[in-house]
Image (tube, rainbow, N blue to C red):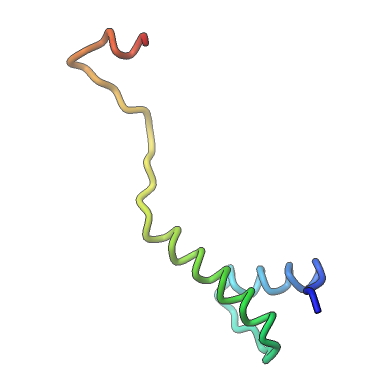
Length: 63
């Protein structure tokens, strides 16, 4: 049986707020673990902020 949007939202909230799921349903556990893994992967990737400037060749900025 496919998860309802309401249940998916509840699982998403539990995963993002670092709460336990409290369910033994394998489909819900799989969705919970998928979200937790995606969050862990996002934490590992560096975030690039700002604008990169090349002061040596200003003509490349105009291209």
